Length: 331
Length: 262
Image (tube, rainbow over all chains, first blue to last red; front, side, top):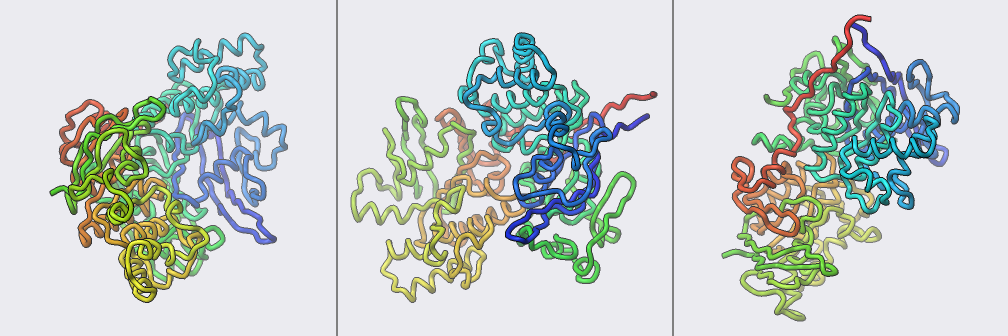
């Protein structure tokens, strides 16, 4: 059996430069995506998950840059790559779907034409075949009457239909990797369920890898094979969804699982995590979660940076993980 | 007796119906959740309840008094009894004003309290929502999202309202702080006894805070019943669809099919 490493992120650090000051946003993050695999990149606001996702595509905002590490896609390091290489890879090899499809769709161009544009630019298709293929793609992502709707403008589409159109654009070139950043957060729950189903189906059909960036562990549970949890710019736990959900190694992962509102559906009260997420620039020297952690001890947790410990396919960044047995999701 | 009652509320925008004949009642100390997706009319209903929108037809009764029949001072007095908490707490906090002054504003408007008594009440309110008296001197931007929502709640309960309308109060918050705010609302309801209308798109969020749940769709109230029954024995197909669409922490995706050989 072979595992195909599609994307490998190694020691990625990202910082913002503001008024002569450097503010670290992401520190020493490593993870990989295998072929056909879906990995959930999970975190709260300020965790650095979205910055990490943007860095993979070379789309960091002005004033924010990768300060260390590499992002390897099939042998090419995207961190050092020039703009032309990146522009070619984006859309063709790695594609992205964002939370707000309206921000990525041009309101003045018919939806089908925007999908066709991707095909013409990256695959060199002529106008007519591109238009035909665009209609097929819109149909494949579940847009009804694609022949009619291909000529319509984004504002005539509902939120869910716009997200489907975005997915059609992202998948137009059958990319090796799809990065979906909170793709269903702005959608109604019933629509969310259908979009997640679509992503899973398209992933299976195309054999592509998916990085699903989300704050919602409920979404990760049924959609992802593995997950990587981020907190205050650091990756604090990584492993298979079933293993991590059953028995998390990091107290933050356990706390996040216990805080998920979905617990209420099984009659258990979601448990609040006391305190607040530290602001970028105020990340402590030791474990960033220790001020909120009920298992923290001053000595191993606060004084020195905590190293990653690897056990089998799982990784955790907690000084006390060896001694702790934490509760996961009850089955 | 119910503290708040909606009787046959109807509202249309530009000829398009947004709320069609919605009726329900809330008792003191009770939480009624109104759950629905976008376009369901839940937020329009909330706005009619607090008087931000005038219903085309129907009445909002507060302690048996029709709010639409009131003018001037009588209306202002009743408004005091009906307060709202929004999804974005910055909507009810002036960014340029120290938060103590923002919280004191309704006290200035609706009570005879002097400056010293107001300061005391503000300190007391900050304590009730889990903040400290010295926080009164800070500006909204010095607080996290969850803390700002605490401040908005402190302002909303400043005049001890009979009813608190919460419109998606935790939707913009991180998971770890959502539960904090839900706990706070439950605790305040216990100590102050207000009736609560909790508007949400999320059936998981309202599961433990609601006594009864009203499900809205396309401007209509399709089902109203005890919270437990909505989840375990929904009477309407749409309710069933909503319940089953909540992502489960117990769901698992089947493993990747890996090609063998090579």
